Image: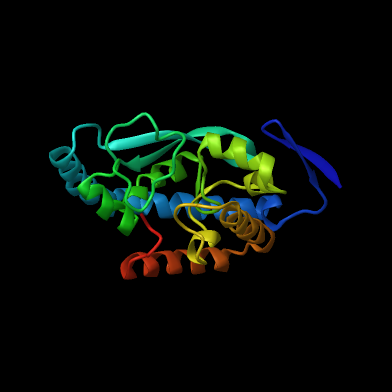
Amino acid sequence: MYFELLGNVPVLCIRQEPLSFAENRFRKRVFDIAFSLLFLCTLFPIIYVIVGLTIKITSPGPIFFKQKRSGEDGREFWCYKFRSMKVNTQSDTLQATLHDPRKTRFGNFLRKSSIDELPQFINVLMGDMSVVGPRPHMLKHTEQYSQLINKYMVRHFVKPGVTGWAQVTGFRGETHELWQMEGRVQRDIWYIEHWTFMLDLYIIYKTVRNALEGEKEAY
């Protein structure tokens, strides 16, 4: 039993999780590097040209959107996405909604297909994120929900992911009520407690399948 400080929040740890072992962390990191390098060197350049040109043609502003998010051990990092919204001053505090007027026409497609998330493989290669893990939240949401939800900061024991267990089990999209975020956190903690390499592969498979089929909550 011991305490760890995640950001400014003391967290009591009572047992070691699978990813607290160096061997498992090494295996996960090797996979992250190999997977992200393969994607960034093959498919991403083509996607970047097509998506980048379309963003530039349909909406004034940069191709990429970057925002500070909460990462492993509460550390802040710049998270990258293809820009799917008009340039605005509310992006650091407000979640996207179903009929959000800030979204561009092309942005709706990017978000529905999850293509807007693909630049996060740059974050994976840099070591800020993993292919699979709890999704990184806005700093404002981390500050808010860490005060409202028990064990919220436990989800920061590992690197955040491009996709995660919560997202492939029905907890994706806008959180209208507190119980929805509580459900995400519960699934994030379950993932941390039950991590295996095969679980990561299953989550990747489910993510690709859901993206191809179209996700109702992806907006």
